[in-house]
Image 1 (cartoon, helix red, strand yellow):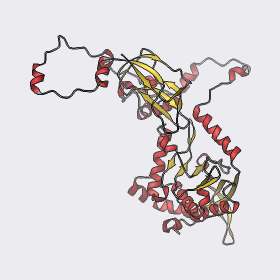
Image 2 (image 1 turned 30 degrees about the horizontal axis):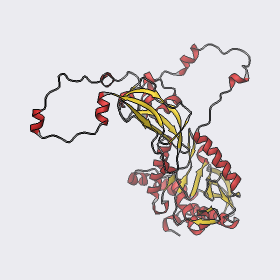
Image 3 (image 1 turned 45 degrees about the vertical axis):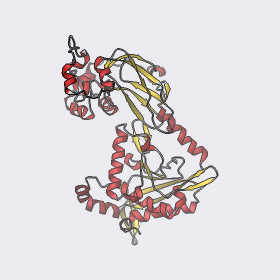
Image 4 (image 1 turned 180 degrees about the vertical axis):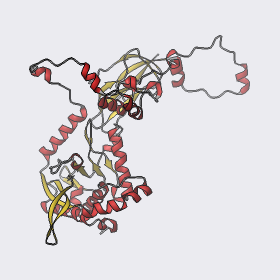
Length: 419
């Protein structure tokens, strides 16, 4: 009997998804919980797993097609073992009844796929997105990977372990024929790739922010000397005690929360003809991934200490890089922090993350000559950019918010004492 595999519920506001990639083909034998395909929603990529063991009868939806939640993705002809695993187990019979039950004429042989040994190389097509992406980026062939996952599936650690055994590409390059002389036609030098649903959503939301909000950016600069000295002095003790690296982001999250509490309009949003002031502080932290920019949210950041903030941001970053973010991780948020400095950006004007009314842009720390006590000294300086919706936040409030962040970073004891 063929079992329908349907699109699962993907979140309260998600009604459809795009089939980004099939991991199996018609006729393939699959095990229970084996990934079948990747679905791409407006915010995250999720895997759909097999609910029974058996073989793929058909693929009802092509790659790149959009399908509604609850729609049929494929059919699996359940094997004997798969059907038995999927069926509800009967209540355990008394011992006397078991003894009286007649024996079957002959034992049913196990399905051949279940008894087949694991392949010599990794089954990258059925492996998770993190392992596949790493293998593609590093050029690790499937045959060089020794899989430790079920049914020959590779983990990210398996790919990393195989990197050392992959031959250098120089020998392969030497064997390639020389490129023809003269320029090729332009059409041969172009590659057309359909935009992913996530990339389309990013484009639409950013353009919506520009078209809807009265967006303006104000700038300031902050001297990082004191916070860098504090971090350098305590980072080893911090990591030993809390098991988390002490970065700069926790200082900026604390500084922003201090500013948001003093200037509530920066933590508010417009809803129709009403202003919604939020007395909670869910801070979005922009993370760049190969699929695009995502903004996972650190919930109730105001009640977290420095260790809680660093652990929370670290976990969200790992989930983003591995493609494991859920809809709940990306929903909401009252204010966003974007750190372009990790990529070397010296100055930028960040775009609002609607419906939020403010976003802070951090940038590269750079030694610059500054006048300190009447003398010119080299100081580690960072430009800060605060983009805001002028419909709800006045220029005075935006400037005061940025000044408050600057004060907290230049005098980090304020954050520790709450002043």
